[in-house]
Length: 396
Ligand SMILES: [Zn+2]
Image 1 (cartoon, protein in one colour):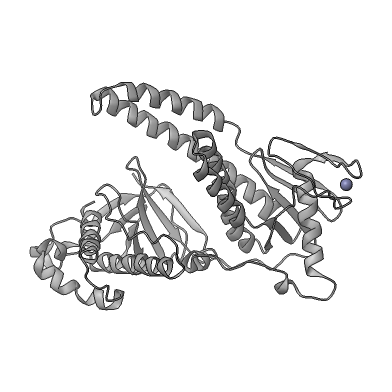
Image 2: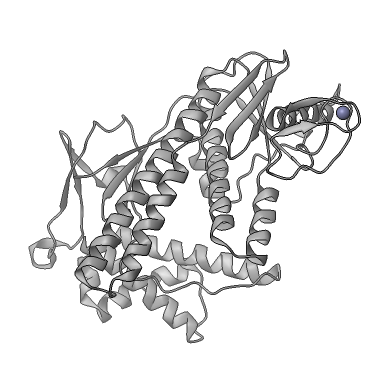
């Protein structure tokens, strides 16, 4: 797919210019320079204009994030040049696409026969696209598979009636929940992670014994990618099933979970202090909880549930019966209260605490909106997209 490469090159060209001290004019002004760039590099003329414009949006977003980091005093980290194999995700508005049966036709740009160097891309779809889609994103994974994601509007369901269920998200038990009536839910996580990690370690150590760039080295790298993709897919699948269960199958209307952002930060700090493979993997596993939260966000919206995130500090250390606080290292799976003698599964105890905290925050007269609900996503774009379900399918 040539247009992707051109987009990447245009992006990199701008990053280099900025690194050399050129002032970022903002994406609107930068976009106006596209015509001049086309004169400079005739290859660009053959790329679909809409796609090139996307480059300026991306660059603008990257620069905004950079300035924000500078302002808040974080380590800024200038936007980076993208390697050739890291392609953009290209977003096509629906009106520029044609569909013939299950064949999707993507325009590649170039006006008239003379300028048209690349034939329009024809891609076979695996299933019929959803009706009334308004955007299609084409992306590519590490192994070179192409995917089309259709985003389409769906009428959100009417909120269901009553009930609250609280979940503690964890690594061993993906989600342990309890509702007002004391009914418990346990959702296990993907079990094969360890097995896959072991296999991946084996493949990598075999590969690292080979001479770099030798045929066997390249072969083993490919195997490594294939296996890790399989692991990722299985993990994702289990997250989708869990979030669907919570958002679509349970009768409770309000779902309460802990806010993970604090947990993430603490984990990252710890991993930085003592870098070791297993801890890094633990951080990565925690990323699974984070993905689950994101899935819950859009699925709850879709099925008419309300998702409430609240501060989960100390929820695993506190006794859910008497409020006593004691240390709970991660390996302790059972909570044994030193004060009142309560014995309970660690995750169940946390879920009870989250539920209690939800009711305490809400209080008798305050409305739901004032109880520390974090509905805004860090990234505004993601938040608006959450209401649009996305159909993803692999292209042949
Ligand atoms: Zn107690």
